[in-house]
Image (cartoon, rainbow, N blue to C red):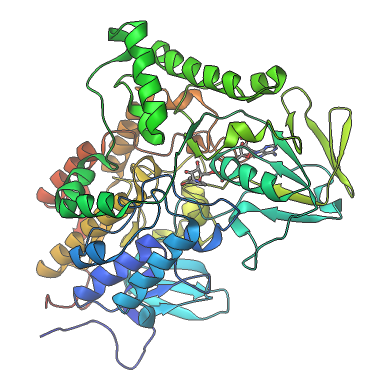
Amino acid sequence: MIMTIQDPTDPRQYDVIIIGAGFAGLYALHRMRGMGLSARVYEAGPEVGGVWFWNRYPGARCDVESLQYSYSFSPELEQEWVWTEKYATQPEILRYIRHVAERFDLRRDIQFNTRVEEAVYDEAGARWELRTEAGERVSGRFCVMATGALTVPQLPDIPGIERFAGKIYHTATWPHEGVDLSGRRVGVIGTGSSGIQAIPAIAKQAEQLVVFQRTANFSIPAWNGPLQPEVQQTWKKDYREHRRRAREVGTLYEFSDKAASQVGEEERQREYERRWQKGGVNFVHSFNDLMVDKQSNDTIAEFVRAKIRATVKDPQVAESLCPKDHPLGSKRICVDTGYYETYNRDNVKLVDLKKTPIREVSASGVHAGDVHHELDVLVCATGFDAVTGALRHIDIRGRNGQQLSRKWAEGPRSYLGLMTSGFPNLFIITGPGSPSVLVNMVVGIEHHVGWICDCLDHLRRQGLASIEAGQAAEDRWVEHVNAAANKTLFPLANSWFLGANVPGKPRVFMLYAAKLWVYRQECQAVADKGYEGFTLAAVPRPALAEAP
Ligand code: N01
């Protein structure tokens, strides 16, 4: 028998409220419903997909191979779904997510066009009380933040930008009807993953393209192409084993057991060249010390700079495109299709903002250094208030009315990246303090949802109703996360991993840089020890629904 705690006279009370209907929210709904819990998803957008619903700029695609960037929970789904390209485009990934929503009948428990503005923990009732933008109120015993790491677009704070008479677009909120850039003079600000994917596509449409680059980034060719049926079939034969390994390492790459520092120059160059020809993020794994040894990293960084100089015909432009201020991989590596080659086109111009900073935007264009660039369209590929942004934009208040944004004013603090003390029964999927965006997001999401479901099951079986991260355990975890980051080269870059792209955001490395299998073991060990470091309580309320 399934016994739920939902009050039948008040349809707005649920066991679990999930915020967000991207990869994380959909899987959480599927699993929690399967446990017999009443669950409801609130989604700000009009459709499922999360980041893949919004990011539709020209050239948008994933840089994890399609066969890996997909759910592993259903062997039938993974066998039946057919990917068409090595790296899927945004429309194809969105089609996949929609298919999942239909196939598992998820839509009936999702409320679209509903932005949650406030989530307040009611201590007496031991429930989360949520208020939406439209004033609707709902409550849940548990609240799951499936709000994504790259949700809140970051617009550049440039003097005069509001005066620009042309159109301004952000890559993350690209118009759904598309934008016809033919015959237009287009400026792109930003050369991260989004800019580096969009620039070659925009250059093919626009009459003129001016790229405003503040920091040169490392980019590796994707060598994308159609996914051959025989490659797909071979992979599908071993899908279970591939998934098992992915749970240990995140994404399956060719991991090296050699250090760049231990081999000679010739072997290093041979390996870099071989990997460059294969393309993608696999390149970063050429040797096993590249993210911990600056001298080793210098060798791979120099290899890429040589590739840039060999590709870009104008030596001055090539030099501006060569990243020199951060180790390769310390900012999220980019994967491109014809990025550096784009600068050989007659209609493309690079403005190096390190030499000629933007002074202002006027009605007719962008003034950088002494030059005024006349533009019809300005594209901001300027990234996100990442990892904590979506959480900061909801007024989340825990015990004693404590605000999450206040608690995290000096940087996010969590235990295992899953919960934060003072906020009982609030789970965060792929939040700060977990590997999050450092691993294949779908793999990380499935792990977190699995851990949370096991935890809810434990509470139910023990007749408990609340779980909260302990302060001491959280403090130790934060130190542990910082120590892991400090063993790597990540802190050497001004990246969004550190919040460095958002003015005023505290400079804290927000992610757990250990190997995924280490993190999984740590999470499992905590659970195996009866959720060590957490406080579990039987508050005087009906316990969770009985296990089916
Ligand atoms: O954002 P970013 P993104 N004036 O923050 C520049 C994922 N993703 O949207 O480096 C001038 O990386 C900024 O300059 P700087 C992926 O995880 C994945 O490109 O701060 N420039 C930078 O060049 C990725 O890492 C995929 O000096 C300004 C750029 O804007 C993450 O999303 C595709 C500026 C922002 O780069 C974010 O990528 C796309 C200003 N005022 C995204 N403000 C794939 O899977 C910012 N910039 C392939």
